[in-house]
Length: 316
Image (cartoon, rainbow, N blue to C red; front, top):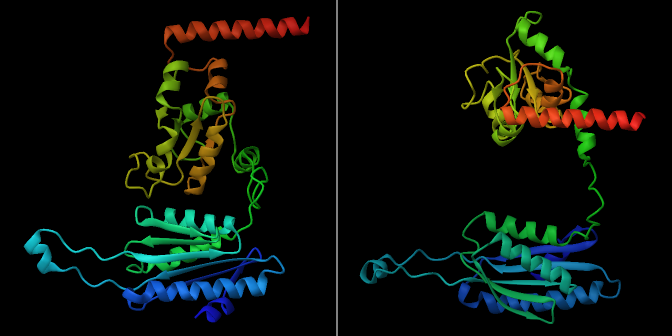
C-alpha cells in the first residue's frame, strides 16, 4: 500500500502528495495505518531526503460505521456514538505537516481532535465520521494539494488579477457614459430616440443620500441589491425591469462605483446601462434638480465658496 501510494503520488510545486483512505476493520485499522505511515516516511526520506524535495501524505481510516443501536437509544434515551477515525499526516518538513493539519481542521471543523505531533513531521488526530461522506476523500485531496503549494509573496499580484484602476477602466470602456446634462435631457425625452423607457438609479446608501442629498425622481436602489432588482430574470426584480432594452442611468456620489455597477448590469443583458460622469456631485454642481436638506445646502455652498477661493488664491 505504501509503495503504491508513493508511485501514484501527484506532484504540486515540486512536492509529492497523496491520500490513502482505507476501508478495513476499524478495530485494527489504526495500528495498520501507523505501520504503513512509518514505512512511507522511511521510504520517502530514503528517496527524496538527499535532494531536499518535499512530500506530504495523509493516511486516514475511512471504515464505514455501523448503524446506530436503536434498541439502546429507546431503552436509555441515548444513541450509541461510533468511535472517531484516526488520521495521520506525514511530510518532509514541519511546515508542510502544520499546513496540512490546519487545513484538515478547517475542512472538518468541529470534528477533529489532535492526538500528538511526533518528530514535528508526523501529526496524529481523530476525525468523527470520516469516510461516511463521498466528500471526505475529495476534501483530504484538497488539503494536500493546497498545503503543498509553495508560499507566495503576499505583495505579488496573482497571475490574471487586475487592479481596481484596471477594472474600472475596463468597465468604462464598455459604457457610453453621459454627463449630468446629457442624462437630464435623456430623462426629459424619456427615451424617445431609442424607443425604450429611461430610469435614473441612485445606488448610494441611505446614509449618504441623507448627508449629501438626493435627486428628485431618481429610483433609489442600493448597490448590494441592484442586480436582483433590475435583472428581468430575477424573482426579486422591480416591475419596471421587465425588458432588456431598458435604459438605466446609474449614479453614485462621484462616478466611480456607478461605472462598475452599470457594467454589471450590462453583463445581465441590460446593454443600454450606463452611468453619469462625476456622479451626484457633478449633477449638483451643474444646477440640476436635487432634493437636499437645508443644512446640507448651506454646507455645500460653503464648500463651493472655499473651493473657488482656493483656486483664486492659487492663480494669484
